[in-house]
Image: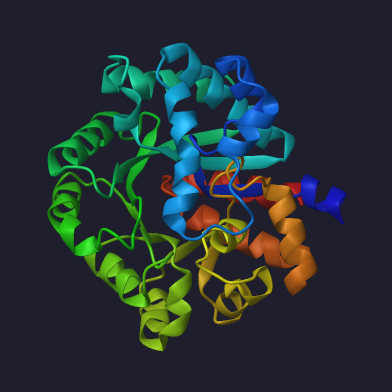
Length: 324
């Protein structure tokens, strides 16, 4: 089955650049040995909480402070996606985290876009992340940056970070500004937070939700997700690692799918979670008996809910169907 899954055309909508630097590449960029890097970059199979999981981004962010490194890391990621037959990916990162060596925000974004563009076989876009716990002014810079590069390699913004520490309510003015500028957005919600955070995110105007798994506990929220045709960006292995879900077998993805909730399958962070997209498909197949047809439906949903133009969506849907 693993060979069939590897050949399957795939779409990934929730993929963090800084959480997806391979250990071998990190070793070349840092001169640290592999064992040390595995300790600081790969999360345990079960963290205490999301905050512990997020500590695994510290070293990767240190490595992503030059134009050359940003380009190499982005280029490497797309090459990895090509090997898994990913036909489209929306890759996200927080540009404000990469200016510690005096790069401008424009240089940061352009360096990543340069890396992504070096592989012509995988279509990609960037989602720029605002961060919980960061000042309003810093997050406004992300909105301005997204406006500048919208439809030029950037497709949307996001709000990421420790949801349990920084409630969504604090960020309402930022999303009002994004709507004024016609910038699409997804929001991390209902990962370690409650279903009510998902409801708030939808009412703010998010057309997709990062994770959203705790919406399963509230039928009213599930109904709202279906009514508004919201897609949940599901990252099963990550959800278990952050202790959002106790065990893989108890992940709500099957119940969400059976409830006709639109969803996509994602790795979240290939290195931090030590998972490839194909391996995630394989785990879901073994645990929940998802079929190839199920995966195709999920990937169709991913394309239809992507931040692409209708024409681009039609082209990808043809590619998805013709390759299966």
